Image (cartoon, rainbow, N blue to C red; front, side, top):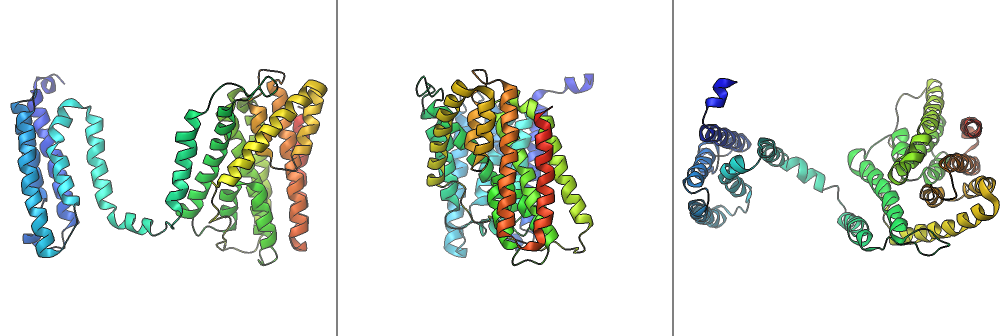
Length: 420
C-alpha cells in the first residue's frame, strides 16, 4: 500500500485513461469484426489515441481548459469531415462510433474530477449500450403506437400534476388534501403500470398461473372474472382455479405495498397477517397442482393490452376516494370502530383500493392503526367472497368446487385473524 501511495496521481490517471480507452476500442473492434479492415473507424488504436490526446490537452491547461476545448474543436472538425464522406460514399448514417470517440476524448477530465466508480459506470454503460444494438432493436418492435403515450401519461400524473397540487385538507369534514388524493392515484397506477410492463415485455408468453400473478398485481377481481370466463374455453380446470387463487395472493402483496407507501405503522402490523394469507394462497395452489395431471402450462393472454393509465379510470378512482373519505368520517363520528368494520365488509364487494387507501391516510386521528388493520382484513375477506361469487357464476361447473374450497379457506383465515 505504501508503494502504491508513492505513485504520482498523473501517472495513475494516465494509465486509467489508456486502459479505459483501449477497452472501448477493443469493444468497437469486436463489434465490427466482420467488416473490411480499411473501412473501420474508431477501433482499438484510434480510440486509445483519442483518449491519450484528451489527457495531454487536459493536463496542459487544467484550469482554463483552453487547450482541451481547442482539441475538441479540431477533433469535431475531422470527425465531421469523416461523417460527411461516409454518408456520401457509403450512404451510411450511423453516428455511434463518433459519439464514442467524443466520450473517450472526455475521459481525462472525468478521471480527474469525478470519483472512480462514476467513470467505471460510464465505461460499462458504453459497453452495454453498444453491445445491445440488436437486442434494443428487437425490443423496440414490441412497442405499439400507444406505448409512449402511456408512458407520457404516467410522467404527467406523477411528475407534473402531483407536485403542483396543494397539501392543505379540502375542508374540516374532509381531512384529505388534493395532493393525498392524487398521490393515491399515482401509487395504484404505478403498481398497475409495473404489472402491465412485466406482462407485456418480460413475460409476454407466460402461462396461466404466471399471467394470473402478474395480472393480480393490477386487479385480482378483473383477473378472476377473465379466468372464470376462460374456464369455459380451457380444459385445464386446475390451472384456471390456481390462477384465480394466485391473483388473490397478489392482492395482499399490492395492498401491503400501498400500506408501506402511505402508512408504515399499519404496514408493519399488516405484514404478519398478509404473509400468512399469501402462504395460505400458495399452499392452496400447491395442493391443486399436486393433483394436476397436466404438465405443461399453456400461454394465456390475461390483461395484456389493457392500458392501466386511462384518464377516465383515474377520475373515477379520485371520485371514489373522495366519496369514501366523506363516508368514513361520517361512519367514524357516528358509529365508531364497529361502523368501520361493517363499512369495510360492505365496501369489499366493490373496488377496495380507494377505500383502503383512504383508511391508510386516516391513522392518528379518530382511527387507531389496529382498527385500520382490522378493517383492511375485513375488506379483503369481503372482496374474496364477491370474487368467489363471480367465479361460480361465470366459470364452468368443473372449477366451482375448487374455487369454493380455496376462497372459503382464505375467508376463514381472514375471519380468524380479526380475533387475534
